Length: 143
Image (cartoon, one colour):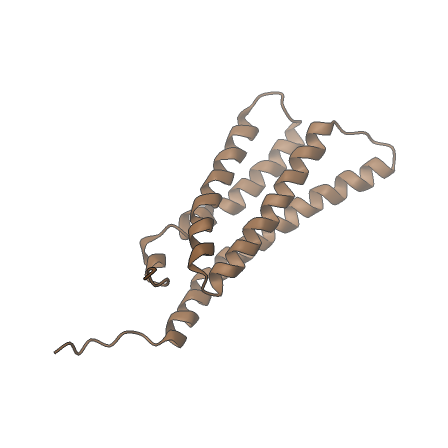
């Protein structure tokens, strides 16, 4: 006779929300830094300062990826196993892409590379935390 009790769904949901809290905060910070860059580019452009198209494109792509990461992390925090799997895959890929882009000499000005590096540093703990073995216990395997 098995007398082991499994945790209640409410306990698992509460544990999941607690586990995702730092990831959600980091994801929000990633969005905020990316949006601030776009806002800066917009204001500076309105005052007559021109920027290369590559800066606009890269900054826009980073903002879009930040919004996607936040949406996926929020869905995973609510219990979506599929979102958790997507976050496990996409967050390390984005971090790797940031490392590659930041390391290309002369591709972007240093101030843009610094902002991009900050975004990568905000996402790095998400990529680590979401892939920890203890996260697996918060999502029931597919039947």
